Length: 149
Image: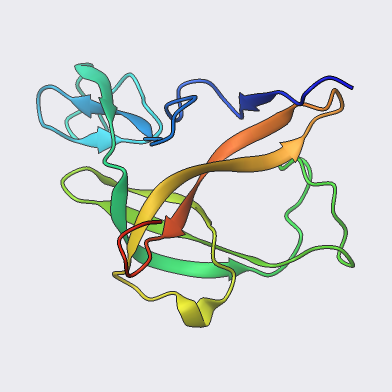
């Protein structure tokens, strides 16, 4: 049986492959506004001077909630049903002088999450397609007390 392959959920969202993944956004050359995902026009000054820019690896948890029910498919590619579904945390991570980015949080216990805690970008499997390829996506993981995520 061949070794499994992996591919990003979409091109240009995060550095791939990487042991230290970063989100790929865009920054306006005119006003400095940063966006994720990258886009051609600036939402701040409406200019078209956007250029690719990498986000920091770490940010702080700005807010979060728990996804307590199976998301609708489509648009989400979910193969779970209410009996097998495990709720998970989602939230916004704020990257200093950059932007806030929404994503899944790899800690499902809301008692272990606090606003302002340090988070780090990681790449994790989202699902496996019909060909056996793991579809990878970004997520956020709390940074441990020792500084390692």
